[in-house]
Image (cartoon, rainbow, N blue to C red):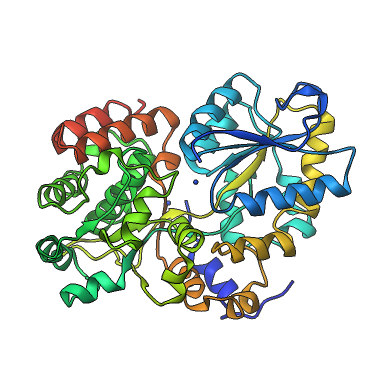
Length: 443
């Protein structure tokens, strides 16, 4: 499928050329051939999916496949985001992972590759039927050392600030373009009885974009590149310390809703505070939009939802167009699966993964698929302005930093999540954070 130079598809591929530098109870659905779902148990193929706003698109895709392939039916289990991340790591290590492993790429994928836990999919990725389906730069995020181990299965996910226009109108404010302007809004919102930001501190990972964006805006991409590369004492870079200082300054100023450390994101409680007028803003992935669309669609259709990029930091080295988030999510195939399970997974990827129906259902849920030929669908969608913004933010990003808990090795990510939560709760200093994280760097 050819696309003219200058189209959004080509721009997205060019703009992301430097890429890589989800309710709480789990449930099951669908048949479970052989009485199990583990990769090598001899039953049928299996997959675990994340519950929430895009769950329907994933389930629908597998339902369609199962109806057409009664001898290769996938058994599906769903989990909330955090429980999934914990369970899949244990399952992969025990060689009991589902046939299709849902992931984010980055350091976690690399750890799977190093352990021999996932299949080399380079031949499948090179198949024209697969290769021409995905945007090249997004697909590239599923590679490790030049080989493909994961293929896209979800939408592009840049993090932006979403805001309640009514709350901004209440204090006569405009979206801030700099960190100074953002901080100046804090007392104004508080005086109006509105929390400036809502965030889920309970889940920990929603705190990550704050650190990643501030590090980038202050020091540029080099700082995190050094961390990911394992450079000695990389976490002691002044940009990291200054980023954590700014986070704590925002916390002390009352920038976040009271009790944010106990607010859940899997239930959408954090985002609800924004669209119900308890908080003015939230920094989040496109799941924010999807959550609102599901819970209160009139908030969007009524023009109350706004969005803007993370502000520049005065005197910082980072490009304000840089983006933090996830290129997309991916499927990998477990090396512990049986030959029949692996073949079913390969067949599914080749014929059904992000096909026209799947992509349309993702877009309907508020998620822009990283596939070719989406321009017309976006233009005809119910919210072309928002979807085009997501495309443009990603397309024009000089640097797209993968979420830090996925960019880093799992043991580093665990330490980071704990340390960052302590920063937000003012339990440790930025210097203590740096020392703790430096100790996780290998070599």
